[in-house]
Amino acid sequence: MGKKYEALSDDMAAFIARQKMFFVGTATADSRVNVSPKGMDSLRVLGSNRVLWLNVTGSGNETAAHVQIAPRMTIMFCAFEGVPTILRLYGSARVIHKNDPDWDTLSALLPPLPGGRQMFDMQIDLVQVSCGMAVPVYTYEADRELLNDWAQKRGAEGLNEYWREKNQLSLDGIPTYLVSGNIAPATGGAGIDAKRAEA
Picture 1: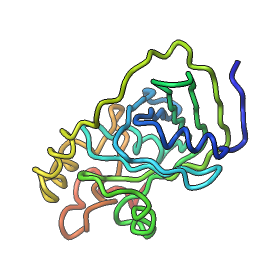
Picture 2 (picture 1 turned 45 degrees about the vertical axis):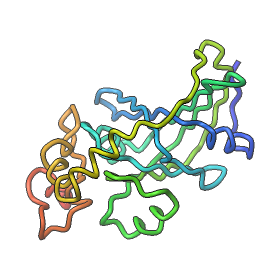
Picture 3 (picture 1 turned 30 degrees about the vertical axis):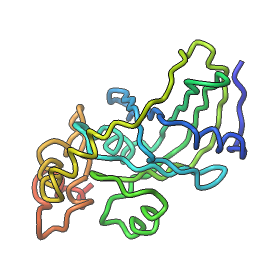
Picture 4 (picture 1 turned 90 degrees about the vertical axis):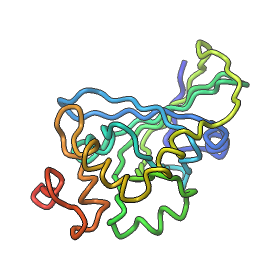
């Protein structure tokens, strides 16, 4: 049976640091529920009730769209080797874009990754730990470098264009505000995303 905690212990934080993958769940009251797998060295435990993670560019941007309306977030870690364990973090998160005043301070806590587009600062109000005995055993070999290579090949302006074309709306048509949050108005704050100031 799962156990509930109000905060992360040192052992829980160490378990999180060892994991090579985690899953993020978000939704608004009437949107589709989104679950995203995350990898790379993209998450840090900042305290017993706080984690920070970097979101890199991908084909969708559901998490950011959801959090700006309904900030609740669940993050799940699974042990794919060693003692079977599932650890879930429940709480609320805020999205941080490159134009936000605390981007530089917080991004310095994470390794720079090509294609980084947002960070999520999550306040944890519940931790649940369960056995995970049905989770299969896998052996970690390496991180895939395909996404890093793709982002480096596109370059800064290529990524900006990709955000404009692919990342401005969720599957349910919710604005992500990625363009106005990351690109200076003089170089491209137009379109759907420009309505951020009116939201």
